[in-house]
Length: 115
Image (cartoon, rainbow, N blue to C red; front, side, top):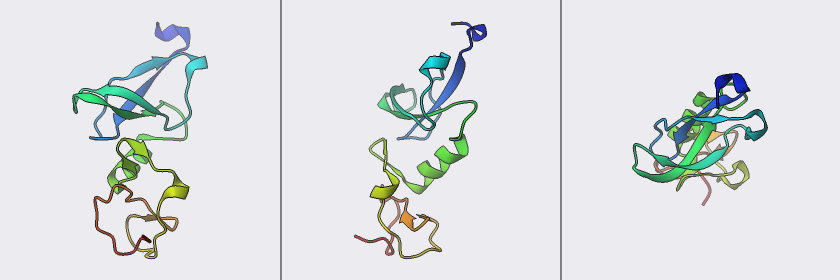
C-alpha cells in the first residue's frame, strides 16, 4: 500500500506496558472507532496483548491513552467500561473521574471507591 492510495497510518500502544508498538496502515474503508483495541504482538512485552489504536486525526488521542493507562483503567489488557467502574466518594481523588474510580486495576489502594 502506498501513501498515495489514501491510507492513513495508525499508532498502537500496548495496554500492558504502555509502550508504542508497530504502526499499521489502514485504508479509508478499514478505519476503526477512536480508541479501538486490537490484539497485536508487543515488541516490548514479547507477547500478544491488546493495543489501543490512535489515528493521526480523531477524538481519541495519545494523551487520552496515557490518562487511562496511568490511572489504571485497563485490566488484563481490556478497557473497563465507564458504567462498570466503581463509584468514588472522594471527588478530590486523582483517580476519580466524573464520580467513577478509574483505578480499576487496583494499582492504588483507594479507601473511597465502593466495594
